[in-house]
Length: 355
Image 1 (cartoon, one colour):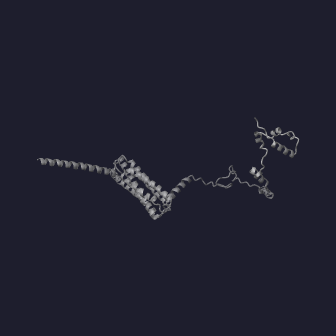
Image 2 (image 1 turned 90 degrees about the vertical axis):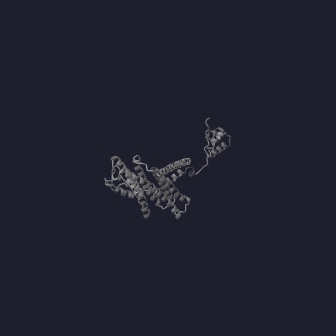
Image 3 (image 1 turned 120 degrees about the vertical axis):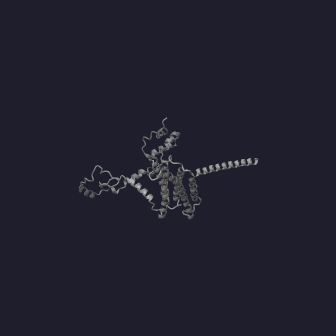
């Protein structure tokens, strides 16, 4: 059923339903509203009649935006006043022709300039700007301007033996390949190059273990000096695990030893960078360690590449584990020989006694 309209109930329930059309005064309308309010009505009609009595609210509460716009529209603005004297002077002036600045794009505002500014025709876009910026970043990184001169000199001198053994490994590998392909070496024979390579292997692995242990010991010195506060076992642990990882690599085959040291160098650089971020080391130490780790890591990669080229052409140099195994086998063989000699002597003594 369609709901009753607000005024339909008034016409049906009030005895004065027809006087509404004849009465025009406000007093009769108020009397009519009072009679309608006192008459009984249903719940449905009462829900509709509640819309007749609305609470009067100020315009600022009901429609704040409308009131604000009305105030703005009624207030005079200084921009609306026209200065007729200035306008007349401007009207008397003639526009100057400027074909140099008028073009198909003169109505658009340039992003990196102003309207009316002539561009330099000789200025070309620098296509290498991004590459130059990257090269500048690399140069600033490797310049190590904040590193003390003594630390810079000794640090670079410390990685030279590692780099030297790496380059020597590559050269020996090239000599072996050259001798294998041509029948003779360039500066040394194939046997000499292989012997030199077997000498370089333990030198590089042993020197790498020394460097890793030394880098870990630096944190012990910083803890003794109390640089950045006393951190206790957190900083001492860096100097403990580094030799524990470095020195067992001398018992591994060369390839596995170099790979293990490569991982150790990178993880140690990560630990040093975090320590520098926490203030445990000087501010320049992270960049300093990055450069040294970069050189050492590149040397290890070069050595692995060089050895990979001649992996099937050289004899494997017995490592410490192989030598220990050979020593045990020799001891076992010697023990068996001694046992056989003792038995033979016992048998001979028994034969002599019988005679």
